[in-house]
Amino acid sequence: MAKFDFSKSIEACAARYGEDADAVRKYMNDGLEAALTLPNRGPIKFNADGALDQTILDAYSTYGFYIFEGVIGREELSDIEEDLEELRTRFPTHPGSEVDMHGRPALGADCKGPGLTWGKPLSDPLGGTEIANGRHQVKLQELDAGEDAPEATPFILLGSLQFSDAAMRTYGHPELLKVAACINGDDFAPFTEVLFIKDPGYGAAVSWHQDGDSHWDNPDFDEDIHGFNFMAQAYGSTPVNGVWVVPGTHKLGKMDIPAMVKDSGSERLKEAVPIVCEAGDVVICNRQLVHGSFANSGFEPRLTINFGFHKRSSVLDVEGAGIHCPVETYNAAVIAERSKVIGYAIDARKQKYPDEQPYSYAPFADAKESFAWTPASKASIKDYNLIDLSI
Image (tube, rainbow, N blue to C red):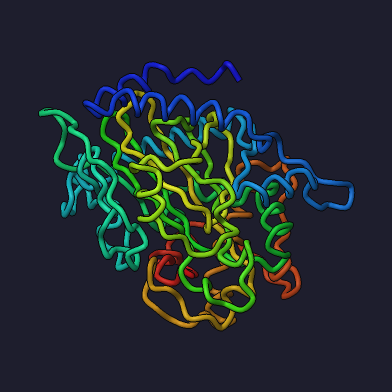
């Protein structure tokens, strides 16, 4: 694992913390060492019967996350980089702007649903607020980004599949969809899709939290009831720019994060480890896992194509949490409408990678439904994230 050398970024990060510099440096280095000893990384592997390899399932169940290495090849990574570079030219010039850098209508300017969110450089915009039902219970330390820093930088792009064809194609990756079926059943349901943007020297923090909201008191509670997220890495993930997790907490129910901080003596939670991986790796992360990310005060960018899936039983006829979209009850018709993006993604990927065996999504196959990714279908998913299946 010597290929992971983040010493320069760790030093730069530690220096921002003043009298806590030594403690931060040690925390980052110790966390990196601990992360690389965990037996939870490797290629996606299936058995002859199509089931996900048992060692992967066991590691995912034990730790709450697994790093699938080398899922996205060089060709697709280049496609993603080009798409996302072009996408950024369409961002609003600043929060509230309706035009991009070229004076065109900005990306998402005509959408009703949430799109691009912004954050003050090296801040924690969610911690200690009532945003997302108050699940970010503590505020992480906010750092000084310097006098030359912009007032705000791009943070999260919600509803990303309507904006990025490359993200749509990654969403339709047949092996990832097969993993989703192995964990959540052949009739798995979608959740939400976003891009997380952590620019070097500016990227905002995401305070410690658990993603689940609706089922903590459910009598059928289990470690998978709130689903999972895939986190596809365009540039890689480091202790400085990446997500940190507390392994195993996905099995423990709703956690008292302020108490965890108090017990740890600081915001640097004991037993937490960073998710460390390379460009092209895809992380599967249980939504119930305690996780968060510090402000990216290092030198490496992070851009994560984030998308999640649920067990159908977790969302069918369930009232949503109202975190990612307005509250409503997800009946079969709502789930079917929201699932159309799976069909479009499968076809979008088939068009780009015709030699690849496309995934067959059971609910569509059973209903003999087919989907074609065309300019008209792209227009039809505008504001699709208004019915994210948020639990």
